[in-house]
Amino acid sequence: MTFSTRIVLTTLALLTATPILSAAPKAGQDRVAQLEAMVRILQVDLASVRKEQEVETKKREEIRSTMVAMMKDVQTVKDNWLDLNSGFEKLRFGGYGEIHANFTNSGGSDMMDIHRLVFYVGYDFADWIHLNSEIEIEHAYVTDGAGGEISIEQLYLDFDLHKNFNLRAGRMLAPLGITNENHEPPLTWGVERTMFDKYIIPSTWSVDGIGAWGEICESLTYKAYLVGGLDGSKFDASNGIRKGRIKERGSFQDVAITGRLDYTPIDTPDEFLRLGVSGYCGGIDNANKGKENGLGGKLKILSGDFSYRNRRFEARGAFAYETISNAKAIGNNTAEAIFGWYVEAGYHVVRPGELTGKLADSDILCFVRYEHVDTQHKMPSGVAANKSAQRTCWTLGVNFYPTKSKQIVIKADYQILDDKSTTKPDNKLNLGVGWSF
Image 1 (cartoon, rainbow, N blue to C red):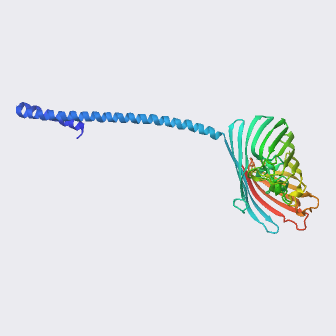
Image 2: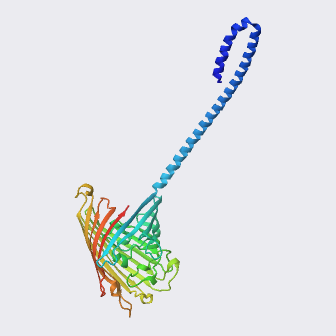
Image 3: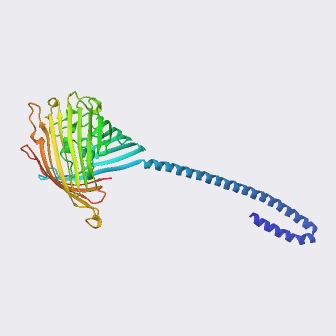
């Protein structure tokens, strides 16, 4: 029975008791006693209700305190999230990749190749301290003997001190030629990289060390690095210096210096010209994990390159001359001198705005390239040249950029290969797609 119900019943009882008291004193006295007992019960119930109200009030106060604490927690989370966002704002993400399909006229090595997938992460510790990194996976599958590879291609810190002088330390790219520092698929013409970029200045060529870079004047820039040298014991007839790159733990047993200058006398929306010269000089007595290979000798490289654009027309090219002292002691039919060059010219047959619909922003570049690569240019006395390492290649191709940003490219080319051996290499048809972001 609820408290309110009891009050109603008690009131009715009192009203009912009035005539009874006047009629029968004794019966009235008994009734009064009953009513007094009921009042005492009501007093107990009232005390219980008051206690329940106090409990309810305490609960409401606890809920209010909990809500206040929760609001404080929410504000703390918001504050921390803002701090987290500020951290995210300092992160930079990117990457690039390419997929190839290669066909030969003999059909001996027709294949599909997920050639590379590269992830970039950068972080700005301050407006003048920047971390840059790239991790690369090649040929889709990494295991012993499969030909795939995973490696840290770049990992370095930039310290932007002044436009004329800045510092760089870590694993960076050798500043030689055009492609080694600018090898993302949308930037290169043709599906495969040139033979020059495989065997003369082997791209991608990472070096471990420290260096400086900056502007000498408005149109002249420089880079100069002190880095670990190559492993001369891995040089050979066909690949030149390519296999001498140390990809795990570079050696400073026999260090090298490398650098470049870039002069840009013309830089307008309609016309652009850049001329570059680069060099390398270092010892070859190096091996993985900082060890020596026991070989004396020096590798010296002198390279030049250019890039030119005039409205729809573009051209670029590079050459390099390399000398290897003590080549005869290396063995592997290693040459004393290696020489190579290439030149390519392209014409934009379609520019953005000339097509309609989804292709309105597309760009189509048709190009032709000739290259000459000779990793047996000059041999040590008494060592015969490997004629198959004296190679030439004509490449006819097209790059199709479907978007204005040129972040994705679809490529096709046909390569006519030749060398001075009696067994001629196969010509190749290459198809590919590449991207960067």
